[in-house]
Length: 240
Ligand code: APR
Image 1 (tube, protein in one colour):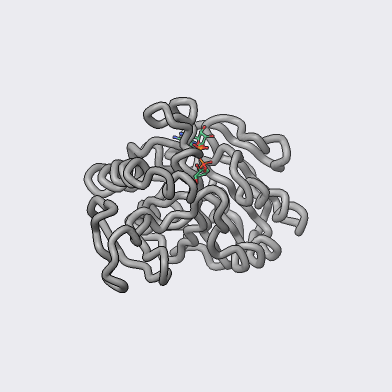
Image 2: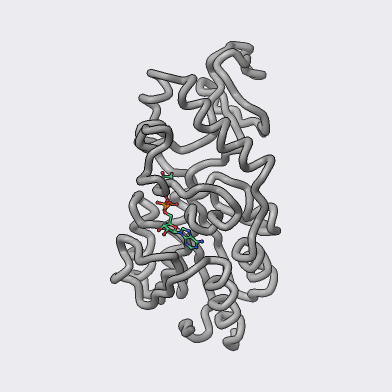
């Protein structure tokens, strides 16, 4: 595998594919359907307003799976080791709402689509850690009202988090690596173009070519647990 020599600033973007080998389903498995609902239809403010029970059930299932079953895999661990070993600037942006990067040891993770193990008050924006099921009857610790708590997830139609930080690191990085994302959802799907525009070498590591595959300078296809160790070893192997 090649990598641009001597990267000083590395940005990694991860998607659901990096957690697939940890037993978490990607979004576009099953043709993007969950119990016959397109996932996009369950992950919107409109869906939550119309049928909060359905939306809570969707996230309760995912939360339980994350807490009870999923464990970080080799790809998560390699990124955590890379953060420790790399002497340049490093930013990990994830579209994933799981905590597997943190459990593998990554310290600084930008969860641009929110976090499954957090909930928040729809009124005040107050955020709470939460590992159990959530429903409409649970009353909010800040306002004591029921029906106010929602998953701390960025739904379709809502603004992703940390966009200022993300834009500034993309403008400065000289290596951008996208791992396990299909490139269907903006703005993350546009990060490669932005990094490339500012002069970064861009690399795709995925099971199969993503929507934007041909725009990357370098592409490698296979399992994240195999591609990620191989690729990041090459980056560290270069003189920094
Ligand atoms: N290793 C590497 N890549 C994998 C693996 C694996 N073991 N398994 C699956 N993949 C790839 C798939 O081929 C696919 O291209 O991971 C990608 C996952 O794509 P999606 O399911 O579309 O997930 P993602 O790109 O993260 O979705 C983006 O969409 O629904 C929203 O907000 C949600 O953050 C999510 C966003």
